[in-house]
Length: 264
Image (cartoon, rainbow, N blue to C red; front, side, top):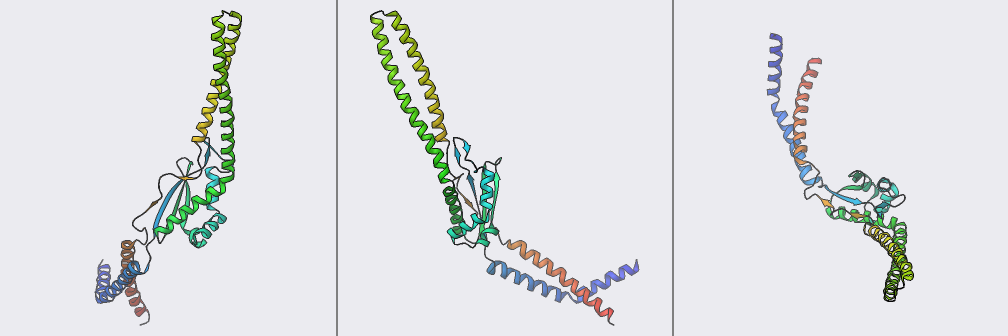
């Protein structure tokens, strides 16, 4: 017990003798860390955007499911194209862009870190623009097909409306002359036309809903960019540097004393 107390007292005396060294080293490191964090390291901002995958009539385009699009965004060829469009080095994009699936894999989240907010916006716009170029042909091919179907149905519906009015007038005329056989025939024909017209109206309504529910790549809300930089974490870095230098300087004091004892 006395030996332990002696050792503790010895180390405390050793520390007190070298406290000036420990304080100087710690202060130098804190000052250097402060200069580096406040004046040398550039601030890094982070932006995020949520992108909705294209839909045609509520369905995904072939080969453009959210997982397909996520794989595309993560590919080197895609990042190389974004690099060419934004003049941001490929390596910088590769290290700073992260993408993931959101909300049960229906949406894609893209995160990007950069020194300037302007470049973050430029990158997001380039990503959205290029994605829409990639799916432009298959999207409008399917979209045009639905529009053609709508046009054909509208023409058929118009014809049935005209036939409905024509038959209705003939029925009224037949009623005046009490032509019962003709009235029964025309009444069945009239009901048949109405049934077909209602069926076409429903098909037309469904196709128009498909058009309404169709979209190319688009943002869900606006891209969000932090007003305050996420890096460097100045307080943490300076505190960690100060604590580390304090502990290391104490270790150097004890190590130096140990070496002196060994070589006495």
